[in-house]
Length: 263
Ligand code: NAD
Image (cartoon, rainbow, N blue to C red; front, side, top):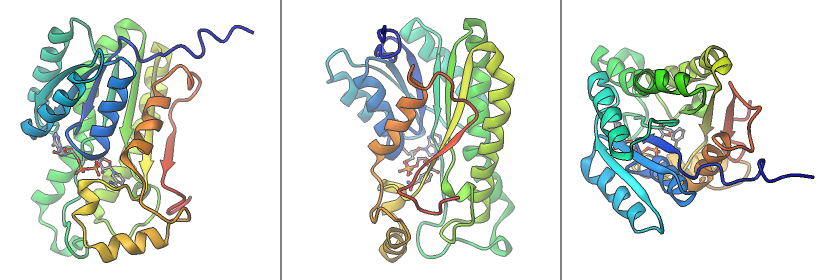
């Protein structure tokens, strides 16, 4: 039995963009790709965070990273950043992890639609949903030409079912990511591009740790595995979905949630 092609370290030499790669889940994903030999472009609107992750990667054996300070909701900035990253590595992007996302109202209960400013709605949609469009729009043609590509979008269990700890804009964007992922999987599959999404449950990141601990304790109580998840546990799925161990998986949104809000 020849297993050599199936189990080769398929991330070596790849060029991956990780948005929101400066902290939390994105940081763990960036480090995970780097440890498997990928060239990693870390996009974050915090230049300091992107640079810190880049520096950590460069300390790894054969670690290659490029830091990009950029707001994913700004298409022109994303397109410019992608071209800079491609020039830096001398290789077009073959893997995109659309992870950047925000969930406003960190303290107390999320805001009601009746109190939500239209600007706040647009802000969240611009980052959580349009941000994913922007990066894929900027790299899609290159992937199609190369007849190879891997895209992972970050949804949430709050996009699959009602969650009392998020607001409607967040839930709407995370549901939209699921439909967007299915559509792109169908559209781009014939061009050799796989598109999947991840639905994390409650993961121990700066976003979640900024929340009142009573809310997190209640979420842990509702989680059958009885704890918060770790960013690296989400990174493991991103690595799997972009590897040669998942070659027939596309259009899926998979929970990493310890069983929280199972659907
Ligand atoms: P986090 O806030 O800890 O980190 C997010 C990173 O993204 C930060 O470095 C931030 O600077 C960056 N970022 C935010 N907006 C950006 C923008 N417009 N442009 C560029 N960078 C931007 O968040 P996290 O908990 O690691 O979440 C990562 C993703 O996972 C998000 O999409 C989030 O909605 C999703 N998610 C998280 C959880 C959880 O429990 N942590 C659960 C479900 C889904």
